[in-house]
Length: 286
Length: 154
Image (tube, rainbow over the protein chains, first blue to last red):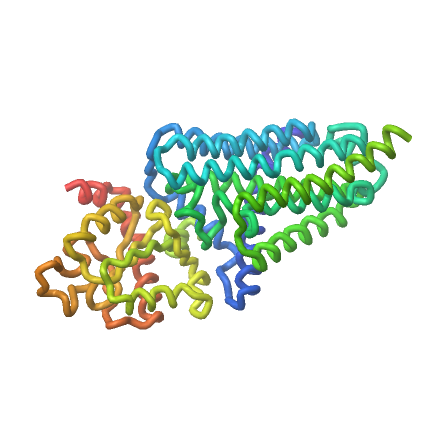
């Protein structure tokens, strides 16, 4: 009974937090560009407006894929809140992205397809790093379960500092922030019309937007996992991490996919592997 | 509260330049710069008619671009509004009697807000877009009755 209440609470509260965080993101971005900026509730206005518009679909399977994107993100977040398996959460997140890619590929629009191909390259870039993050957590705590990770008697960041850096590095791809917002990007900036979301319109686009909010909350919780020993420190770390992403978003220009792949696989994966070897020798060999 | 104001507070615009002399075009682009900060009203310039609520058109319509303009308008989901920027888009301007010119934007698609001037100031353009955003709400009410959908078909 308690778990059902927790699940319902998560499903209701997460998009509210995600929307407010997105609104704060837009406000901070505006202040950094010396503008006044939209109200903090602006993402909610956008979402309700999208839901009140006419539905236009190019192929009817698009609706299913957009819905699956939302549902998989929701399931991943609920699993995180219920403190279940980290590896499974990662796979379900990958399913969510796959649903989005299939939705974009199900149309004949070239813009949407280029977006989908770029999203595939993004997945290729960040997925090994995310798996390295989870393997690192496993080496330290001896379990994939979040329940055991939280019970670990030290801050994970002290044992996995490089992996944390690698994770924040790929977070820019996952949150579609500036240096690596290849497939699509949030609000004003465009990427080949609108990249992967070109063919989604009205309420269907609203579903994807909602899915992004769930994803945002989940990824911030992943940052919190590194500071799980103390909940206040964890929340501060999440907010600081999000602020860092906004800062990077505003000070950098978009890079090409080649540079993205090269940088992620050399720097981020390299840092993660160094940390993995260090942790492996410390916990498994010694 | 949020539900009722949503349409008015988040107009996303798509901008099409039909053969304008670049004067109105430059003014529209300067409206979108951080100096005037249209994002504080929720206005966002999207490149995709499928995401847009308001079509901002500058310049007179001729036989070449009438098809393109109609196509962009048809791709936008209801409720949608059109803002004609500048004298040429409103009536054809100095090109009105030319053999290749059809006239203003309203010869091809229904126009909701006219912003006259050669070229209009960014403040006027901004006001025009915000007027169009208010019209969206009325259109939404009519949409429920099915009036606009039927009107579009006929």
